[in-house]
Length: 437
Image (cartoon, rainbow, N blue to C red; front, side, top):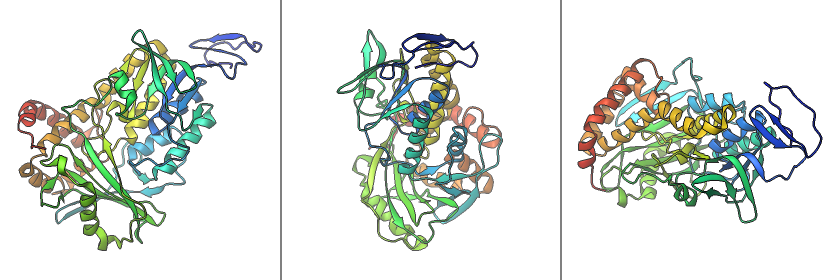
């Protein structure tokens, strides 16, 4: 294979010759070579983003996905403006997605319908794109960029003297200068690398299905912030309606682990209760498939090490206040590729540093906030406050839309900075008095 570095003089070489152009090295003509620049474990949005970015720049990339091409992922569908911005940067056309102009937030009898803000950072619209179609589009783009995608194959890191040197499968070992872990926060890969969830930090559980509705073309996502379980206990979480524009709506509910009685929470019962609440307004038909649940990681013990980085869910990059992580997955995947392309040797450490600068403050605040709203006597007035005025609702909108990070200007950025400091002081007390699970 021949590497081409746009910043270095190009030289013609014969098959089998080794070329070294600037940062990259490879072997011409060895199509089946078992050495690559980047090996990716997982072909979801995060892993595919890495593959697209790196392969388009000329790096040799292989991606191992344990599912089949076009497999469904029980997560998401709703794309924030931040996610749409990342897809635009990757040049992924959204012709197959349903346009969303904003968010409708419901807390008790209070309803606020707001459009996504116009900023110089993100587009002023989101989308709904079922994961089976979104992921297929990203996988196809990675293949078109030149990455090798291997489906229905589980890969694990190869560790030599404390360094990840590549990946192995049942019948194949691939050496790589960088291994990118995009396989979520659970399972064998996370255990091998010490990248599991931090036990004392919160996590979420969610469940969703699809139903037919004449309102499938609604231009707003809907979030009901005032959920209750079968015992009438207020739940830190929300119910959602994501109109897909194809005759259906994605309906689901999610809850945080900080609530009292979390271990006894029945997600199917909670979903049915929420379904009953919205059934008439949305004129819902029967469920189109069996409801499916999943866990939402919101922390990780490690997100990098010698020869490897973790991205997306595997790096705990999930907003504790809405369970969303597709946009963070896309951004972290591109960042990992960019840093490797710039300087492979320092990419893991630089990645950890830059991800921390961009996201850690906001995500830390969200985790601390989840302990706060785990107390029903705090949650109930807090929900009423969150949509009480347009000004406050716009801050809630920014948080729910993943529009907040270390560079966010205006009221939302100031509020999150103050909240981070205040909740930091209160954190020991919040953890000590957390609601019993």
